[in-house]
Amino acid sequence: MPMPTTPINIDLDLVGTYCPMAFVKLSVFIEKLEDNSVFTVLYENTPANEPLVRSIEALGHNVINTHIINPENDPPNSVINKHPITEKKITLIIMKVQVKK
Image 1 (cartoon, rainbow, N blue to C red):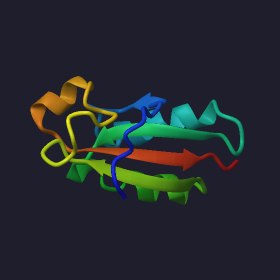
Image 2: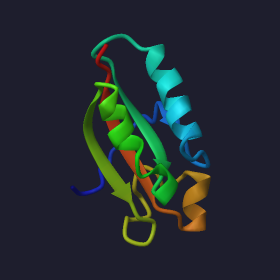
Image 3: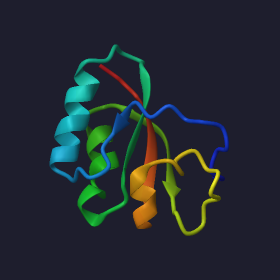
């Protein structure tokens, strides 16, 4: 899936946070949302965060899609190019989730 060129609203920025704390923060965020709400989360593509998608799905929520943002390959005008972490050449993931309660 190509990187979107229009701005994406990141509802929850978990960059710099790793599982299990990333999962805890994401779970607390979800608790505040209504059923069928859709939100976007940004997090680092690290081995520690690998179970994040699986864990959210295990809670019954719907992961609509994920997109890997590789600062080496994505264009400088991509939606996340302004995030300070991209200067460090760290791969990020955008995940879109639908809440199911």
